Figure 1 (cartoon, rainbow, N blue to C red):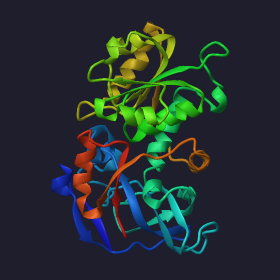
Figure 2 (spheres, rainbow, N blue to C red; figure 1 turned 120 degrees about the vertical axis):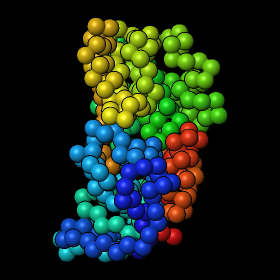
Figure 3 (cartoon, one colour; figure 1 turned 30 degrees about the vertical axis):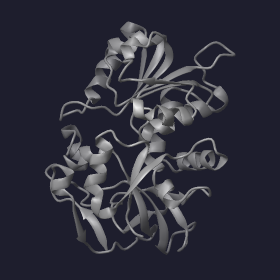
Figure 4 (cartoon, one colour; figure 1 turned 135 degrees about the vertical axis):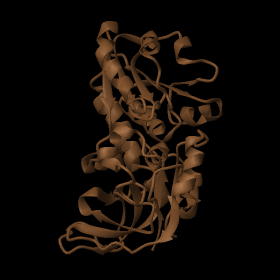
Length: 335
């Protein structure tokens, strides 16, 4: 089978190579999936370079522990292990696994679910990890719940939620989950993507190129910080006393990639009468079921910008990290 392989750390265009490799054999509780599509994200750029350094005990000290990149997928089951109970050959599934930039991947049964009935395989590929991250940021970080429960404001008023990076892979889901959970949502994005964020249901959209965070002139109950890296002082200017900063991701130095800011925020935010909630996504079949239900009900939809052939994985990553993408881009791994 064909797969993108990486045997050293470096720029994606220098270290990612399309090769023929052995097709994996599924274990007793695994299925072999023909991968139709797999998403790309800024995380793929960081991992290709072995960043942040602090993560290398997990990702690999001198070279990637997983030779084939990619962490979520949508495709078709072609073989099931003898102990697999819920999936059969021919089932169209989506979920998460290591090594999805390939034509085939062996995946534990518990990491897959049937794709939502109203999505194509390419659309479904754009869901799992980005949607996990957004759901957990809104529900667990911000403390919002379906029907508006967990509202930090007085009874009868909607919590005001500000989302930076609202047009990206995680941000487009965060806007929709926040709206579904009863919030008044303001999204920040660049000029060319205002229509996208408004179309997802945001009550207000702010162009950060003309109105930076510090100049918003109004306050919110929750700030979902998606890679924007605002200073604690900047956050305090837009949050009410007792407001919550939800940190998701970050950019910065090679050692910590901005996550050191989380620690500073957690230590200093109480002095500003603020709360901080760092969120590192957790893969969850229960959350995948929740997301499936919300997609099938029409409350949430994936935003798929472009598809790239498997051979252009490095180009797809460049496209995403250049900030051009609206929502997500995916690789077509097996036609």
